[in-house]
Amino acid sequence: MNEHDTISAELARRIQDDQWAKSLGIDYLELRRGYCRVAITLQPHMVNYLRSPHGAVIFALADAAFGAACNSHGAPAVALSMTIGFLTTPQLDGRLIAECRERRQGRRAGFYDVTVTDETGALVAVLQCVAHRVAPET
Image (cartoon, rainbow, N blue to C red; front, side, top):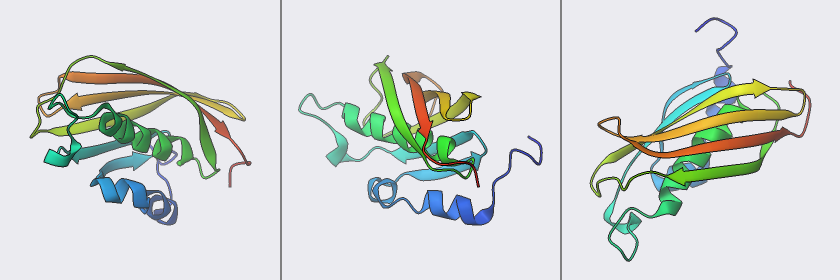
């Protein structure tokens, strides 16, 4: 990491003040330009009728990482697409970690990869995401 990877404390605070992420119990572990790592501890109310962690919870965790990473440049960005592949079912009482990495950022479109793993590092889900920058970088 170099000085160009860091973001301002104010921008980091605004990104991490996401009320939806807070309501889910998402923890921001690392945030820098084009990168974010977040975690969530699975709770009993996060399971589906099959008694497995709900796919929406896994997706929401990945979305929080993606949203933070694509907005870390300082210009508002929104998701154009997010494609998810679920690879395994995590343990009900575990902790999940989503890591989003920027592959390429153009003037308007950004391309990102997200991985969701459990505490052991086992891959739970992968996502390919595209963001649209709606305003110039500030």
